[in-house]
Image 1 (cartoon, rainbow, N blue to C red):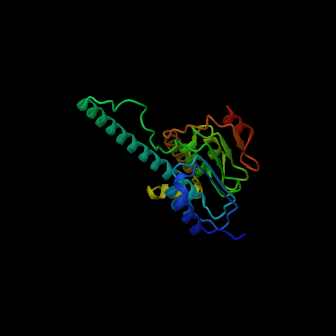
Image 2: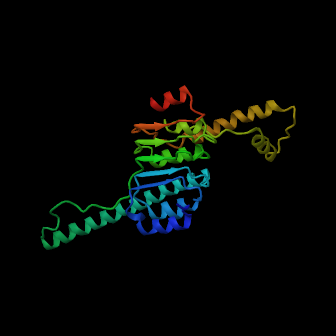
Length: 245
């Protein structure tokens, strides 16, 4: 009946997290960003189902960074494991050849690879999560995800994040203030009557950003069977059609 603290939960995950494949953290208003890195990332590498629901103190920036770090750590771990397995197999062949033994009989041992991604994920009522969270999610688990719940993830979610589910990578919008600051840094004088200069520069920068965005391959979510977009205000007929298609 009491609110669990981040520190207590990290201690629990440190004890049992290495064997967990499913974790639900729902309606935990005191949990903060450190639960992602010091708890889940550090202790729960084999998760295939994660529900992070109604945790308002966990920020969008921390969640996007967490998913990116998890993907990098998984890739590094599995790559090193494959190298070790190949080296061990090579040594086994040499040993068998030298001793003419039957060491190579039977199936190869099962190696403890980290899963290639999550199968189920819920961010229900994590209202502040953003486009970058969804993009990192697709990069982390897009090919394996079968169930995704984004109920009420609406405050900062736009077309850019939702289209990532369809494997479409849009560039980040650039504000007039950013464009003016860049022009001034380049020594270009820009006044109130120079909107045409800003518009021309915008076209150039948007083309650059779109090329940069398209250089990152987004796999989409081809195995997705369940998708909850209730109360996601950015969803439109066109976006939904592209996700389904």
